[in-house]
Amino acid sequence: MKKIELLVPAGSPDVLRTAVRYGADAVYIGGEAFGLRAKARNFSLEEMRSSVAFAHEHGVRVYVTANIFAHNEDLVPVRQYFRELESVGMDALIISDPGVFAIAREVLPDVEVHISTQANNTNYGTYRFWHNLGAKRAVAARELSLEEIRQIRANIPEDMEIECFVHGAMCISYSGRCLLSNYFTGRDANRGECTHPCRWNYAVAEETRPGEYLPVEENERGTFLFNSKDLCMIEYVPELAEAGIDSFKIEGRMKTALYVAAVARAYRKALDDYRKGEDVYRANLDWYRDEIGKCTTREFTTGFYFGKPGAESQIYGESTYHKNYTYLGTAESVDGRGRFRLQQKNKFSVGETIEIMKPDGRNIAATVEGIWDMEGSRQDSAPHARQMVDVKLSHEPEPFDILRRSELEEGTIC
Image (cartoon, rainbow, N blue to C red; front, side, top):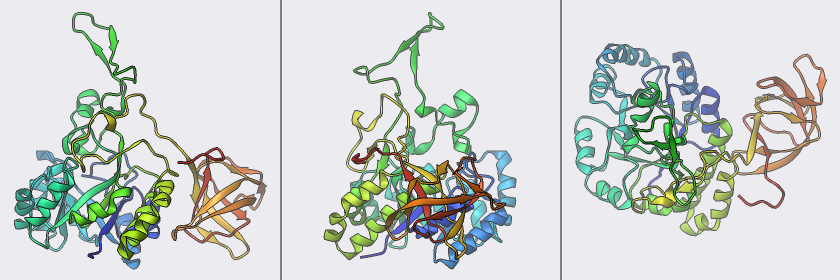
């Protein structure tokens, strides 16, 4: 059985370190220009260099996104940007625009190029086309079924890789190429500035009655017409593997370290268990599902993998996420006296029971025994966002362990 890559998003250096520690084989990141997540924290050149070095020390590859659809005024800056990236040491560029592709091959001929899903990779002819131009991999359009992916695998060179999204948000527009954001707000989704209008509430206005908004309802379920459920394929790892997919991609460069850790860890264990045997994988399905349910989630769908989705793949009544666990922070260092340091992400207090989430799959309940500020003064709680504090728990964590608190009522099942 070939090894399938687990590709995990990272919107900042801290999240990249989390992704590496919690099971990624590769991470994808964005620089400060030419990616499709302009609102993400993203990476400066220096942060890219240090993050790539960290990832490589742990045997993890790094891919940099440059997948905008470029306009004329972008081409000269893209060339300069790629020259600057030469010192970063990344393993691949993710590109959708043929003009940007040509510049990458000229300026960075030794760096792999992966073709973004934005390029609409829906057939084996397209894969062959990009392979002939020197691309190493293409990301399948989300609109493909498993059968179509099998056909692509059977009709492309063995060294051309197929990458597929297996988890995360679904875009309402074909291959993610949305015009709504630009139309409503002037922020172009195809140049990295999407405002996610697919999650907004809509009504109908009749042109002769301006200002009169008529609700759009389907069985009174609501008016979120474009609001897709999120993709989750954790229960179908064997089917994905047998289709010939080389890389499982998690969506979410805007997500927190807790989300990245929880999802990466679940898919890491699922892939490792599947390599041991399908029976091992199926025996642990409940664990994978429960762990994914412990991060901020929406309802799930299998997307297009088993046929075109219908009304059951949409969420008509709301656009909110469900927060089952709260991210408290990541242990940064341990002083050997039972205390560790972290930057607080959400409030927690002395006496609370929280959970240490470890990369190996263990979740350890621990009581908060003490909190100190940087001057050494004791505190009853850590209420200030991003405050640096020293903490003592009843069980000492290791550096990079995630701390979280359950928001579920006792007896609730995710």
